[in-house]
Length: 158
Ligand SMILES: [Fe+2]
Image 1 (cartoon, rainbow, N blue to C red):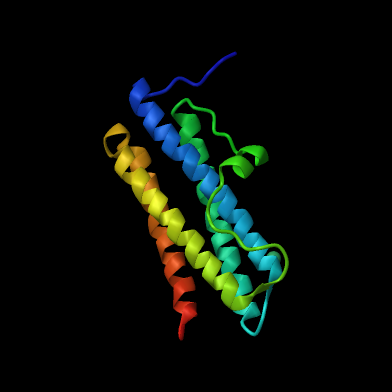
Image 2: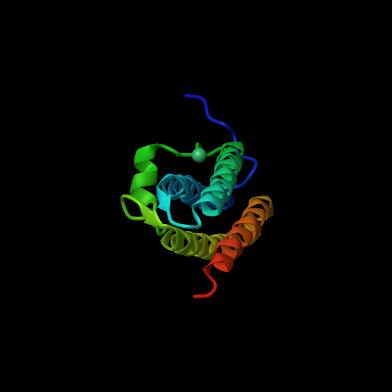
């Protein structure tokens, strides 16, 4: 079997690609969480939240592609299989069934907040190992933090 050769030494590649794989799982899961809420949200704020959720889904899918391809470029095959995501995904998600608009907002705040916290750990971890991967993670974090803010701003008055 042929493999893609890495441009990084083994240790650095391991650190970078673990960070990328964990981020891939979070982003793929987040795209599913966003769609689940998009389909099931009910309440007076349905329209705006329904549309806002698709912005998260679009970002999460685009970023998933970016991190998966970064991993491939570093010589480690990305794993985006459903069973892998199901096993490894731990961010908050909506319960089964209809979701009140205020609950949809809260679950997205929580999911994005946790995703950002985990990304920040990976930003630290990849600083020396691979600043290029770190740079990708920083860009993703900035966008997810922006989206967390926009959902949180919907929470007032609490
Ligand atoms: Fe839709």
